[in-house]
Length: 397
Image 1 (tube, helix red, strand yellow):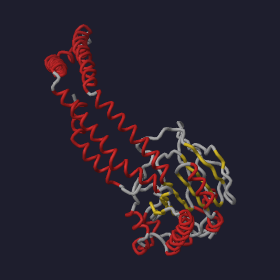
Image 2 (tube, helix red, strand yellow):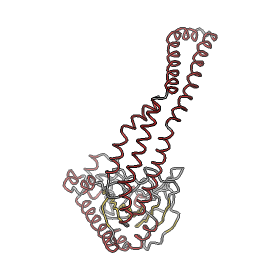
Image 3 (cartoon, helix red, strand yellow):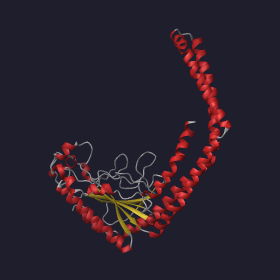
Image 4 (cartoon, one colour):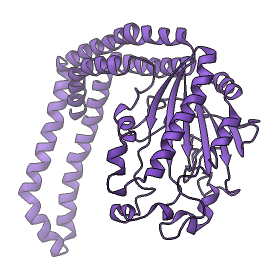
């Protein structure tokens, strides 16, 4: 009955979940801007305190933020699209293997390439966005309320089901018999084990197996009966989940595009992993003048409820339907074991440690990854409009 109890508890909490989902982010079918992270990233005084980030690195971030925003604003104004910053990094050190004290003691001259990331949402179709808002605020709550009603009705049917209660009582009865037999005979059983009395050991085991067999048979009947009682809500839940995933995928791709810039990244994935946990190569090569690599990937996996989720430290969707990856600057020819792209500077320990004075200082942009997630036609349109020469000029700035 534990599973039924959990289900009844879910019935009580579900209306709150529905209201929370509807009002979580009214702008678009994706997480809202991570305002706390953006505020932290632009807190120059706090981040420079104690040499966590040097003035040169802060200046680099300000330049990148302004330049990349200007490039996208030029593009979106021409198309009458809307542009919003989604997420921005506030890294205080390149990796967790360097202690905080070590990092603060590392001078500008010895710091490895400074990492920086910034993501934007572009609203490319206001009509589709309005259609999503109407569905999310008006249609989805009705479907959720129907699911809640079916759950309550099925739960009440289960509570009023005399046969279900009888099966529950029988399972409890055999559990009590098994417990009592163990309590009464365990000392005798252990004595038989110690004295190698196989008949006594067998007698005990056979009796316990008898109780277990009867209990298992009754439990199977109980679960089948309970599942039958919950069939309406189970079907309603499946419909609700499938509808939510399908609609959110459709409206996300129809109305918005996510654009992420990663500067001096230690590695770049292509957005989607295969069965072997390696990142899948884009299936379509893109012709981008001046780019080291450019490709468009279609996700072979079906979308789910987490496909368009962006965590607190993430800059792209979990596993979108389509994603383009464009690499500028210098990169290693060979990928790592998981098929990630590796920047050229990682080939030299002296270029990425905190011991050596760097020939190329940390605030230089050595490479850049641009990733665009959305519907393929929107992705290609943005690529055709973005000033790729301006992006190339950022590298080695």
